[in-house]
Image (tube, each protein chain N blue to C red):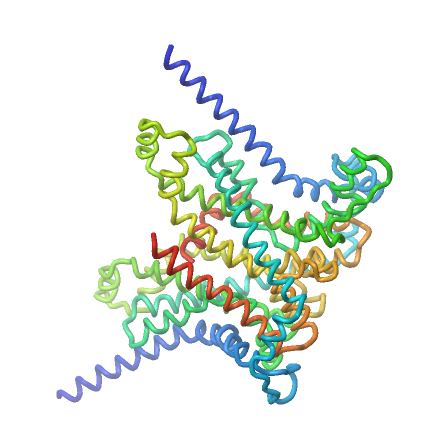
Amino acid sequence: MNNLGRRKRIDFTDLYRFSIGLIAGIIMFFPIYLTVVGGFKSKGQIFINPFGLPNPVSLEAYEAILIRGQAYWTFLFNSVVVVAGVLLLILTFSMTAGFAISRLSFRGNVLLYNFFIMGMLFPLTVAILPLYLQMKSLNLLGSRAGVILAEAAFNYPLSIFIFTGFFKEIPRDLQDACYIDGGGPLMFFYRILVPLSRPVIATVSIIVFIMSWNQFLLPLLVLSDSGTFTIPLGVMQFQGQFTTGWNFIMAFITISILPMAVFYFTLQRQIVSGLTSGALKG
Amino acid sequence: MNTHIVSQKSRIKLKESLMVIMLVAPALIIFTTFVVIPVIQAGYYSFFKWKGLGPLNDFRGIENFVRAFKHPVFITALMNNLKIVFLSLFLQLPTAFLLALLIGRKGFFGSMVFRGLYFFPYVLAEIVVGIIWKFIYDPQYGIPTFFARLFKGGDIQIGLLGNLDYAFTAIFIVIFWKYIGFHMILYIAGLQGVPKELEDAAVIDGANKFQVVLYVIIPSMWSAIIISVFLSVIGSFNVFDIVWAMGQGGPVHSTETLVTYLYNFGFKRFAFGYGSAIAIIIFFLCLIFNIFYQKYVVAEK
């Protein structure tokens, strides 16, 4: 009897938590909902009925963007190129640097480590004006390569920090065993360290992917021709052009966040833990 | 014989140091070129009046810094950043904490789904989020207008973003919405470290819910709170994209933040000396906060 009463009470608090959670969830998700349904409405519908479901569903905006227009595909291509470039530069070179710092004894490795880590103190904004001039003098202004290099540069501190920390934990015995078998340090690096680092590679990739995919200030500074724009710049430009056509803007935003949404909802657990562990480490 | 061994040893050494250089050089060169040198240059340029072209010879000492603090728009920007810091710490983070308490328990039905929903805005680009909310605030189609028409009737238009009194609040709501899930997740991670026995013991000793939270839960997850506060403050000093998307600091500079100010008054006008001074001010604000925080909050733990 006593037991039964207790269980009932727990259910009741859970129901109460669930309802508040649900209301908060609806409020949190409402802007996303508006965006998605907005893209399927005609201009007239947005005016009469901005919040409800589209009735009838209009594909006018999507047709204009995906089939008749070129801009979205260009922005998507540029974003993919930039993110891929940044990932490549970050993963290869922060792993090699982290490997040298943590596993090879050379004079100045602590100093070098601190030199990189110090970079975490500087927000991107501190350096943007001289960075612009630097890009100009290196002839990188207007190029995606410039964006890639700058984004990679600002992410080395965190990624080197994460990789160095992980490599340090790997037992010395493994390295000795590899040497005894006649392998050099490089053999140890790519035969043993790299395969062992898969989870860390995933964490760093997630952090870097989201940072780079969403980055706005750096591309805004470096890029000027809309043919080289990444998605965030493209969205900004697009909404400037179609000031009256909210259905177009909403459709454009929906397909812009679609890659991120798919990525997020399939790998939610890894993404959430990757981003928070990145923050906890940083 | 002996010298032979030594020379072989030194050859191995040389080979090793060559390898170290090859391994470290790419990251080091990129990092130095695009982060370290520009940061040092920003410090140097901040003492000059310079348009970014021609010789750097118009040395002005601390004039740029003095000028900034005499410029009303800069003060507005600085105050807006401080308001964002304050509102985040006293509204956003406590709400995130309550949400974490509400749904953070393991095994709670729907917990993972809710986490996913609340966290989702965090992975979206700020610029995209800004534009979505521009629609929500749209004077013609937006939610404020909708409710005004519903309750008052007639053809009313409410344009919060164009209104000097409400634009800042409207923008803060977006920041609140975008980052609350992230802080909630940090707190949920922290809650996992709260020993259940301690909570139970407190309840047995007659503590009420509020006391349990205040004296058991919060102290046990202090490190998560420390990190969340730190990220929130540093982030608040660097707000740019959202404000840019929603009105580029307008109307009439009322929603300007330090970084939009840097962009509008430094970069756009090619005032590289003055802009660098603003950048250095932002850096020092973050640095001073960082030092105090490490010394008085992190060390206390």
